[in-house]
Length: 181
Image (cartoon, rainbow, N blue to C red; front, side, top):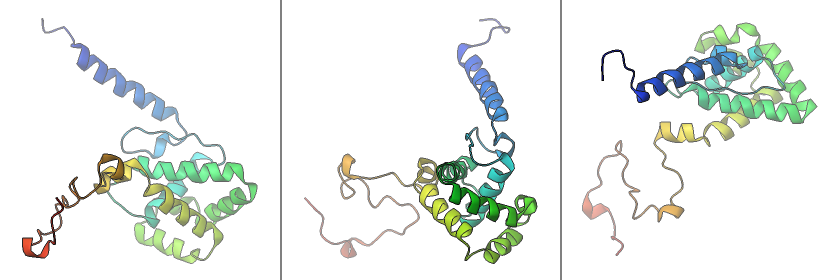
């Protein structure tokens, strides 16, 4: 092949990234996605309200290197709940307005202080509950934390590396207990 020829694989990689970028840029949350491409359709909230929700979720469950897409799933779930129930939408909108537009630009310390002020409110409890339910049940978080998923369908943990955690020290053989045969 000559120098001017583009390989099919390189062409697909380049155009896929370009198309994904255009789709994300056109989405309501495209402006707050510094990480990999993701998009969430919003029905109850504006993109600025969604950005505040994402900042609240990141402050409630802070994982600096966890991709924004995992937190976007939380925003999507909260938006879905608000769409289904007018009272929930009202509670969330009032809570978001109390946090204010500057919440997303505030330092982590200031965001924590702002959330502590509303900690006993129904708004905070709703966002906290949904953050913990959705964030830690997402495949993105599973991959981030190294959770391989349920083991029953794969033969169980005992015979499938239940002790393959690299951050734990090795247990001496005499403390390991009986080995199943």
